[in-house]
Image 1 (cartoon, one colour):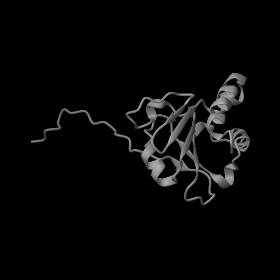
Image 2 (tube, one colour):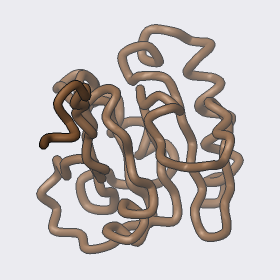
Image 3 (cartoon, helix red, strand yellow):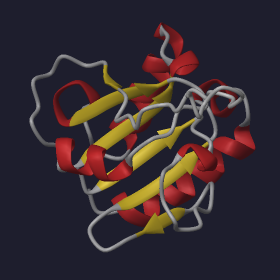
Length: 147
């Protein structure tokens, strides 16, 4: 007898740390940048490079860049373990994608014991909105003012 005869079957997505999209061979980095898959395009990457340069980092040699599919759960502890990063800056990632019991405040730094997370709008949105640029800049300078 099959006890699952009239039972719905659901797809349970795997936890993910996203796909690394820079081949800079960094094993660890102070910063991991997390992008929504749609934000991974030439224009957005140029804009992202300018953001990272403004806070004192060369994206290609000092940062780990990961992309994430929309609505797939993101395992922050796996990213922290794999990249050994102290700061995670996420663009276009939804708070409900993050597998955490903490309440995440978008647009503000969320500080944990050995990790800080900033969840921001998508790069395309920020690029075209002066108010969003200013909000992001104020938050970045709170942590990277002396870099």
